[in-house]
Amino acid sequence: MSLCLHVTVSPYLYVSMSTFSCPTASMPLSHPLSHAPIFLSCVPMSSCPYFGRTEVIDNCLNPDFLHKFVLDYCFEERKNLRFDLYDVDSKTPDLSKHDFLGQAFCTLGEIVGSAGSRLEKPLMMGTATTHPRGRRPAPAASNGGILGKKCGTIILLAEELGNCRDVATLQFCANKLDKKDFFGKSDPFMVFYRSNEDGTFTICHKTEVVRNTLNPVWAAFAIPVRALCNGDHDRAIKVEVYDWDRDGSHDFIGEFTTSYRELAQGQSHLNVYEVVNPRKKMKKKKYLNSGTVTLLSFTVEAEHTFLDYIRGGTQLNFTVAIDFTASNGNPSQPTSLHYLSPFQLNAYSLALRAVGDIIQDYDSDKMFPALGFGAKVPPDGHVSHEFPLNGDASNPACHGIAGVLEAYQRSLRRVQLYGPTNFAPVVNHVARSAATVLDGSQYFVLLIITDGVISDMAQTKEAIVNAAKLPMSIIIVGVGQAEFDAMVELDGDDIRISSRGKVAERDIVQFVPFRDYMSGGPGAGLSMAGLAREVLAEIPDQLLSYMKARGIKPPPIPPISAPSPSGIPPPAVNASACAPPQL
Image 1 (cartoon, rainbow, N blue to C red):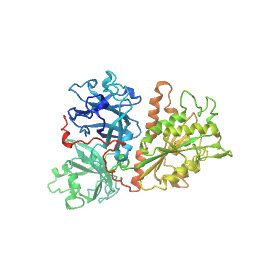
Image 2: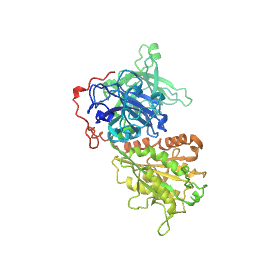
Image 3: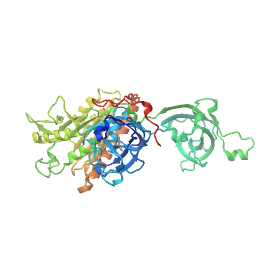
Image 4: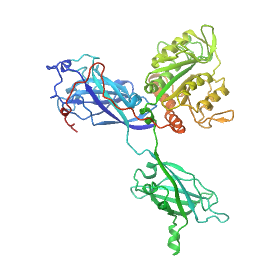
């Protein structure tokens, strides 16, 4: 899912000029403030390219910049951002000539995942970083500030670019269409075209064929308003009516023209259209039409996006389940998939980081339940298929992805790898939690990392079919060189998974083999980004499918409140002191 976002920047400074070794005790309003370049990059941050800058706002400690940065947003990609703030002393574009005030770091996902997609970050006296366009290092706290000292707050607000997201649902019928088949009636269907600026037409919808009738009633269909008229409600929409033929040489019955504005009036005498065949009209003086088409119903509603729910407060609850079966190999041996090398992460850790680093931006408390399966666990050595990695059965949550990794490594030292490979217990574990929150405020994502052939296929299928009714998705990452045919079956992209004659309500499983994205050397990081994209790409649509099936609308966006930096309020500034921005 790729969208364009506006990112708005509003810094609040509450430092005195003495911090910057200036001769006065407070920020003099004679200084033009502030100029905020934004840096957009992928890891590592040191290689980030210069992306853009705001306008300059004169004489203001708490500027609200009008300039908005337009960024491409993909849920499944991590996008790192750096914001640098300057006090502009002259008209030169060379930022090394201006006073560097502070900087803030975040990801685009952090902004989007915050309540109302509004993130407050502290402005810190910077460390040495690459200057815009790579000319020279930026001055670290250029006016004598203390490195690492908090000097203000920056407010970042992400909004989806305004566009028409309305979806229209229409239904038509026809009466007394021309008979085109020698041995029967007609098999009519309609083709819709929107007009272009140059007078040409582009096909935008085709109805189903209704067999052997001159009075068809077509099924209702939904179409984005942009596809129907490109957002221009008066633009011509041409509709052609055909008689379907098996060999593809469909017979033209006639056509009519309308517009979105006319259709939006709904069922009325204004939306009964004569179907006219221009050739027949030219040849026959008494020709009236080749039948009529009537609009039976018209409704329009906004099509909600993944961001609508995230901005409204929907939280993604992330749970990880790790395969501790003996087929992974002895963890003390370098050949094991669980081997803990002092020099690099193993496949399990890499997969966890690739997925977790992105999804944690959408979980406010950053507490992630972490489970293991297929091992003998202390104190009695019984085989468990849903044991907590942190050893706390009452609260298996770990703080952050780093906490999950630490608990995973500790578990390797205290459990005995065993078997078999059973998925159903961890699927049901998360499903029980998802079943308690059906109102759309939370959506649960289970990541299963495994190396082998599943042992409880029938039980897992049943668990997945039941989970498909819940606000839940399942990601399976297969590590190692085993055959993963069963995982492909669980994925259900081609054939929807079923159990005991019951078909899953939604496709909620995504399987990805780790080996397809793992490459050694310097390219490994890029392959991990590819793994994250592939693994997470279906989550937004799966969340939307649940919300739509349950008729859950996005909650209102939480109201925006003024920032309250910890313990130090922003200085009182007369609003009139903020001069209009220099655009």
